[in-house]
Length: 100
Image (tube, rainbow, N blue to C red; front, side, top):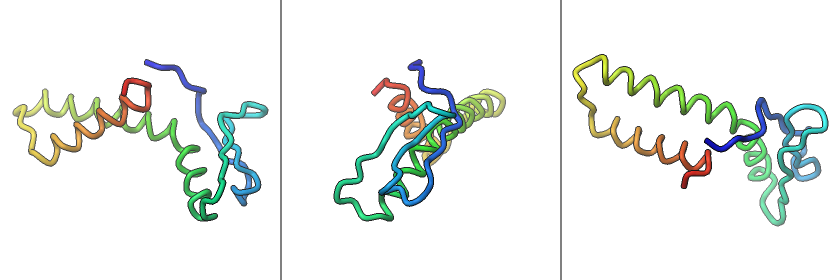
């Protein structure tokens, strides 16, 4: 598993167009967005999404683990919507940790 800067991550103060830095503690900058010609609302949303990344990855990992446990504990059946959601979750987690 790829190692990332430990969370939690925080975004700088608003407006993101002016202060587009995501950090993980004092003097630990994770990234700086380059807003370019993006609308202000998009810059704000991107800052929020990036700042939430460690928590999103942790939640995704826990949900995948819980769903595997639930299937093993139950009848082993998985509905098509659940299987599709699990496939998407696995792909997103793999992408987040550098696997694809």
